[in-house]
Image (cartoon, rainbow, N blue to C red; front, side, top):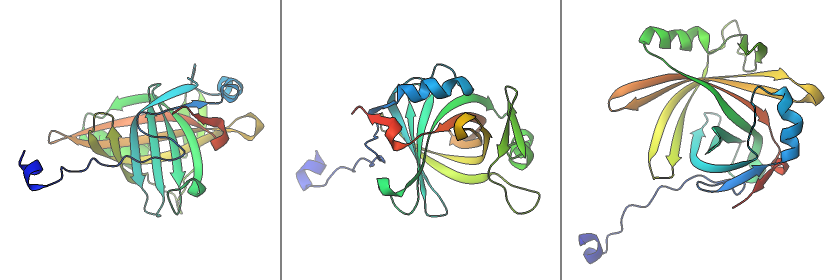
Length: 214
């Protein structure tokens, strides 16, 4: 009431990132033919063509670029990487990722092992498939890349998660690749650190493979 009487505006709602017509609460469709042709080679099974966006993540990279993630109702997220700006002309990579496995990290010792040796390895095996590390540093050690993701949810909740990530890939037919993202996630919840290991698999898309439903 006092805000109305004295003309004070209520706090503005945080603006949720958008790109390519993708936005929180919207939906999109992946070209069904592409899924049918590619899925037999992938670890994922029965991927949905139509997705509803239930949360949006945003990462500001040290290089000046940005990662946007549109989390969907199919246990997946569409990831868009931008470099040098936030328009469609700045998009350098688009992938659809599916969560493969999430494990709770129960001790400091386990967490340090993940950060120091387990997340980043020359090769990573999943279901008998071998993925090779993409981000190699000079020398023998290639530590995980550290970043912080800010996540916007439909109910207005905003949270931040520290992530330590490594990217892997394996070759498929027709010059395609399947990608693997291994992530150590750390989040402060009620004064305690909540830690987990998240493994996701993904594949490349072009903007033409995506139709915005509205």
